[in-house]
Length: 185
Image (tube, rainbow, N blue to C red; front, top):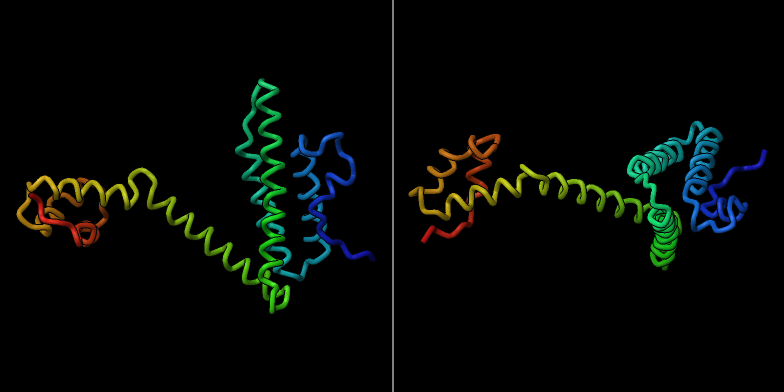
């Protein structure tokens, strides 16, 4: 039985369309089909199975956000952007592995790259939570603005009076937000 390998350029090589840069739908179908074959061929390899699921989830996220439009020119721009981002990701991953293999094995380089990617994704997710409306950064700015008005004589009193109204889950969190603030003038 021939071992299946993932070919990120299969959709372009197999001529799904005249200009592959205009057909991200075929790109996605090709990738998902290959990922499913890899998963089925390697049922005991948890890493491959997990990576296949992760990839399928990424694809689903792209498909869910794909804008529909009656404007064909706009649709073409979106298609080219999706394909361009895919190709850019492939080149970035290739360059990242190549630069990390200097003096180390490819497996070690890939593992290091995966850890860096997970760390970056986790940081981006945390930043998104903190930056969303009503998130910790917005709450911090609100309580600091109240403190700066001079309405309260101490940070403790300010935090105690305002924490619930602003949406803090505890007095301690509100008080912590007031650390290292200047006294109101």
